[in-house]
Length: 257
Ligand code: CAA
Image 1 (cartoon, protein in one colour):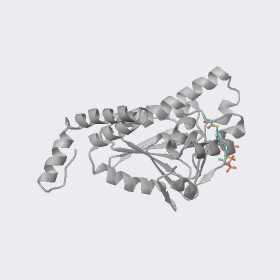
Image 2 (cartoon, helix red, strand yellow; image 1 turned 135 degrees about the horizontal axis):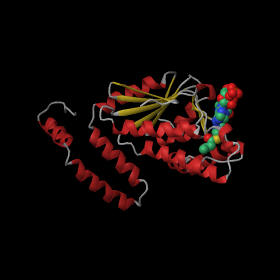
Image 3 (cartoon, helix red, strand yellow; image 1 turned 45 degrees about the horizontal axis):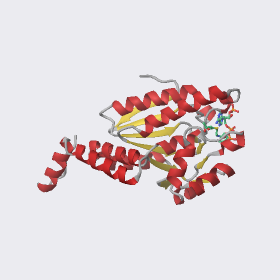
Image 4 (spheres, protein in one colour; image 1 turned 180 degrees about the horizontal axis):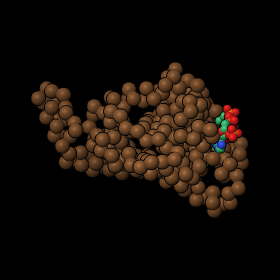
């Protein structure tokens, strides 16, 4: 499938989704959000793709936020629909049965920060600036940033970032747990290094483990633990479980499909 604003590629079991609107610093219009959702569904269903890397084109921004020009004249109902579109797309990314890595090279602001939060792992270059500056525009994060950011970094830091609109540098982002790795340049290369490690392991086990964490985080602890046991049981219906454990006992590397 061809998209106007998203470049989709596949290489060595890795799917790449590049947001390609560099003149507007990859700002998220309804078209970008719709295409991003469709691309994510496509990558989710593609068995050749084991890990997905999301990045932004142009070398200056991952994504500088939702499209301010498009939002300027929205009424309340249109704004609600726009938020639901962004949230649905990000939920699709969060729910993908494979690991999604955000490779951030530059600005990840507002909806861009929220997109990175919907990914499983975040890698940033040192020049990156991450923040939720929506309050400078008279609004606040509407693509689930008020929900995912406090869950990742805690409410104290999330509320400070919300209210000050401060752009956090890459090193600080690492310190507060907002990104996993900081690299001098080329975060995609670091993401590929992680993808290579991930691809050696069982894709079905990763999908179940990710689902257990995602769904468990929304449950009360003991319910989450019980849910984990149910999914653990499902892991024992897979070929990967037989192969992984047999390979260990036969003292050879596992050969996962
Ligand atoms: N929406 C629409 N266009 C945007 C944009 C956005 N979020 N961010 C940047 N652009 C456009 C600029 O208007 C400019 O276009 P023109 O060349 O046609 O004038 C182009 O991208 C380059 O931007 P700048 O000239 O501003 O570049 P800069 O280097 O001087 O500044 C920046 C870079 C600090 C990222 C600045 O562009 C900026 O502050 N952008 C907005 C960041 C922001 O507020 N994001 C939150 C948006 S609201 C949101 O996301 C709501 C939500 O949660 C749903």
